[in-house]
Length: 204
Image (cartoon, rainbow, N blue to C red; front, side, top):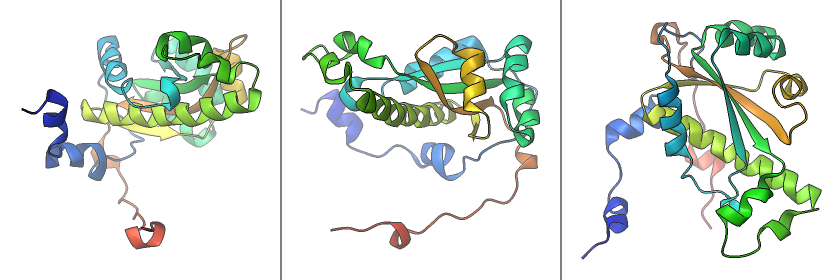
């Protein structure tokens, strides 16, 4: 008899879900005037948190900017072309990583002393936090799309300004930002192509 996990892994998810998350999903810059509730942000996080990270280190940290006061702090950090899309988005998620993530490892990876792998090793801390925090940022977008939202990820902003405005005197550092809401599909440009398998992949 198959276990529940084996049953889940036995077949791919439906075509609609694949299209919604990957094939038809677009990066949105223009947003409909529909809000995103705090409950839905909890739902997105509670789905994306299950994505794998090295030694379950989970270094990503999130600030969901949705109030006028929060937007006033964030907008001066954005490049000019990203100001209006950020201003009008219902929520802008700042995806960051915690350079002291390893302090949580006794809880997250209790089977061994994983904290000792990182404590005092600045180079390993920074590489692990950035790599796995970036992965978790991608999981965040997949979860948001799976739950019916559109995303607009951006790297066009001043990281130092964001860190000063939101993470002063903390161990958190910004990576990228992602607008979340319901995009206006009528304002999308034609989709750009992607590279074919043979251009970027090898099987050895």
